[in-house]
Image (tube, rainbow, N blue to C red; front, side, top):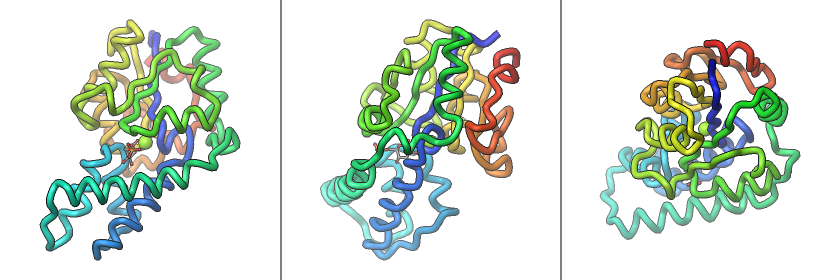
Length: 214
Ligand SMILES: O=P(O)(O)OC[C@H]1O[C@@H](O)[C@H](O)[C@@H](O)[C@@H]1O
Ligand SMILES: [Mg+2]
């Protein structure tokens, strides 16, 4: 029986994945790099500097560390403008119900986000207190697809990884959950999230009883 659930944030609980996409697209195009939805799939779940490196790999120019930091900061400033007006109305359908179902079933609830804006987004959505523990980028050395972030969350929740399941919209995130030895619920397209144990289109189709016994 599963005793804990660890959710990703961006693209699972709220549509910030769209805001990351818009901010990266503007940044990439400012550097003459073509950017589309297909390329963006590879960036989902990847931390800020890792994402920038993947984008700049398509540029013939070489960038100094200082230039890269300036570009990452510019992207983040744009992203912060996009999330500044978020409200609880930006919770995706089924998100609160899924969290409440997990709470009612007595599961520990964690959040594993590589975003340095995770606490701001949780605050804007008004759901910070729905989590027993939140791991963000500042607490880990290696981002997704490394298992570290899900393992740190499981340890903080006091539940062995085999008794946890993770919920993710990103290829890198599902890989991180599986590498941590957990059951993976993918949110999105089964053709993209091939490594997940089960894939649902959105949290509106979240069926806790299907995962706790898995
Ligand atoms: O730039 P931030 O807010 O620290 O976010 C880092 C990453 O956070 C992840 O949750 C997103 O899926 C990525 O797209 C994003 O790049
Ligand atoms: Mg995500």
